[in-house]
Length: 348
Image (cartoon, rainbow, N blue to C red):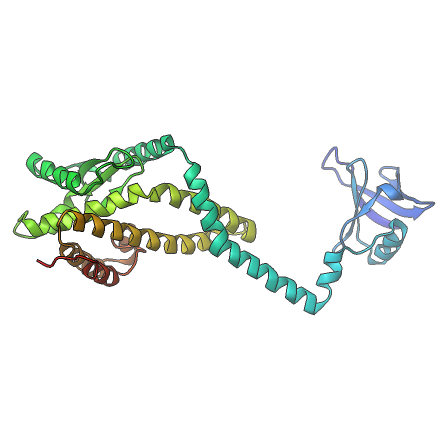
């Protein structure tokens, strides 16, 4: 007989009882009196330095703290270690299992999640793109990050004309250009899944330079920026990113639990940084093809990347990370070189 803590499954109250095993049954006496048939009682997998836990058919349980009772209960209940317990008790088998687990996780991370995300993103209806785009743009406006543009109507019309020139003959969804003043975002351009492309005054002014000269070179650089954003929309990068982020976060939470939001979220962040780089390069390639198809040189866009890189290097890290053209994307120098080597590139 040994002291035990009994929980009847109907309340959180702890009952102190004496527990014994005889005649094929588990007997409790003390603050409550019960008897449970041994065949209907389950002994939980034992852990060293923890109580033995008995689960009864009516949902109740008992915790026995006396280590000497563990062997007796196991014998009475006919407990036999599971193959998992026996496996983990052998060092070589445990190490082999760990290596297999790491390999499976790595495979899922490298191949499984990307494949699943691509497949799931294709099932997302176009209506979701529209809702995501509208809500995201409205949120930025409400937060005051996007303010009315201070550029002239003629300048905005010229920018819209550039977009018309570099967009596909039959875009996947209708495209529209919105120009905003955005001091907090700086020189930036954003692509929204509903077909909206946001260009900031700061980007336009930076491209034009101190002389405020909207010449052919400035127009070519802005054409490249807009074509790049069109590429994001045509390839549904926003939806694909959200899908992959959700799957990565789910796997991270499964593996690391909820002990720390940072620890669980870090793998998702690192994985999606790589995914972002892939998308940025794909959008660069789309821009290069669009520029070449319209007889526009890619060199001004290549120069713009280098200029943005120089500007970003002077900013605090948190500001660099907040800017889509100066965050976790591929190195500007590498992107610049890729554009200069694009087939059919025209120098000016």
